[in-house]
Image 1: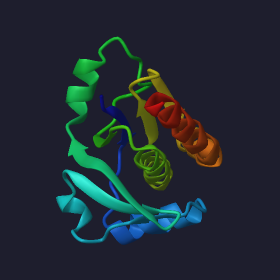
Image 2: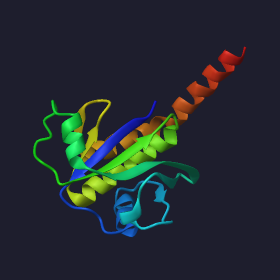
Image 3: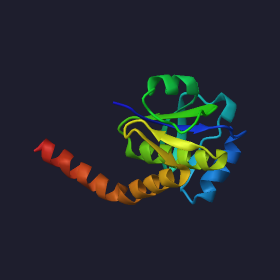
Image 4: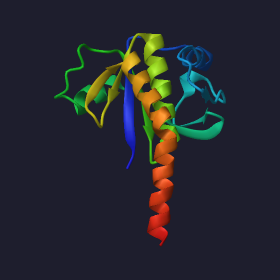
Length: 153
């Protein structure tokens, strides 16, 4: 099962360097791969989170598809652009996607739409979610290792 969030905004960043600057300004230990220009982003985007390789799917998305799919949701207004983030069971990908989305939303004065929770988050709220997950990651990893060990026995 994959998870997804979207950044909804009326502006787009012009480069990965601008996006990385926004990530750095939030104090996240996240590095985006600069293998291709931001305008060509589509599919898997490699990242480094706290010096560990990971990644998530990232695509420019038709905002009208989101409004149609979630027609019961009040988005507060009509946004012009959407940037989609998707990931699977990789906890670092989840945290990295939230960090990247929060920074992109902050830099474009946009919002983050969490599809699973059905919530629209400010960039600050999304950054807080990312920080909370990042703080809890060591505990979650220990719990996962214990569960795997118990499953093996």
